[in-house]
Amino acid sequence: MIGVFTYVSRPATIVFGEGKSSDVGAWLERLGVRRALVLSTPHQEADAVALAATLDGRSAGVFPRATMHTPVSVTEQATADVARLDADCVVSLGGGSTTGLGKAIALRTDLIQVVVPTTYAGSEVTDILGQTDAGEKTTVRDPRILPELVIYDPDLTLGLPAAMSVVSGLNAMAHAAEGLYAKDRNPITSMMAVEGLRAMRDGLPRIVAEPRDRAARSDALYGAWLCGTVLGSVAMALHHKICHTLGGSFDTPHAETHAVMLPHTVAFNEAVAADQLAPAAALFGGKFGAGLWDFATSLSAPASLRDLGLSEADLDRASEIAARDAYPNPRPFDRKAIRSLLQEAWEGQRPR
Ligand code: NAD
Image (cartoon, rainbow, N blue to C red):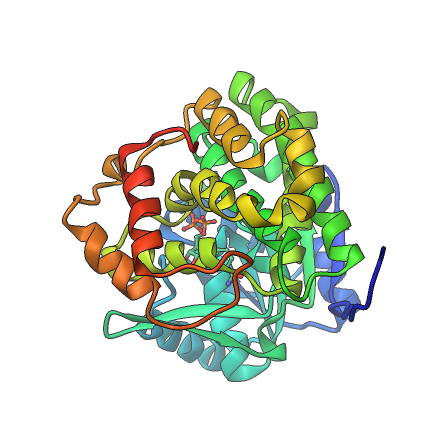
């Protein structure tokens, strides 16, 4: 039975396809943009400079200092550049860190945001911003944060190393997995979640076999869009809370943390949400949590929190922080349940 639901579609334009990043200039013209500031990490500065050169005189310059966790100090420097250069748009070229900087600028200035994603994180289609100030990470939701235009060009992901592609893909799959049992899910988000998981299941092994396989890159980026849209549409649960805790308080790497935790949190919730997860379980051999573990292991993803530098002694404090606030999750949990889940993930066992 379909039941009762509310579906809110987000007002963004999505352009998808090989070579489409060469259309950024034409899109800026259509949007009425005169001077776009192109953002990137230091690592992707050359790509950002090359993109700025294609903007038909609509580039205000490049700000190549986007940083993981969106520190407010960097946002303030970039926002000062926006004013100094009289920019009326930001173009974010990169992964979640660069997109985060564009969102942080837009929150403060309401400038138009164009995002050209080069990982599978999915931030470009959400109205969520995580930013850090004095070592503390806070999350904001605001309509100004949602980028107006996203141009997905699989060609730009050809250079994303296979190992990073795998963990980034598993990060995307986590959005879809939790979307399937979200308390505010609806038939559209569930359909997107299953299709996103299928696209990742089909794409990632082919990327590992041949990182420059264009069709595989296209599948994975399409999956990233779908999974990210689910993240932007419905409430996440225990898995995202645990990953936020580990990243925020123990500085574990973002995508890798999702990759390690996902089979364990899914198996934990599968015990009570098997019906909602059934279409996803069917894609992964019948049991979703265990199937995800087999899938991630076959792609040589990091398997344990121990591998990410977390000590066993950290697990007590991590479970305490993750259990502190109440939030929706299909299966009730307490500190002890999280502690034993973390132990399993720390040891890297296959979920039972
Ligand atoms: P990232 O953006 O930090 O990128 C990691 C590194 O890979 C960077 O040095 C980057 O320049 C490089 N890189 C990116 N694309 C590349 C490519 N195609 N080829 C070679 N190198 C490339 O990593 P991420 O996992 O995409 O993003 C993580 C951040 O995004 C975290 O801060 C996380 O909190 C945030 N995030 C936010 C949301 C949201 O909705 N707010 C969603 C997902 C992730």
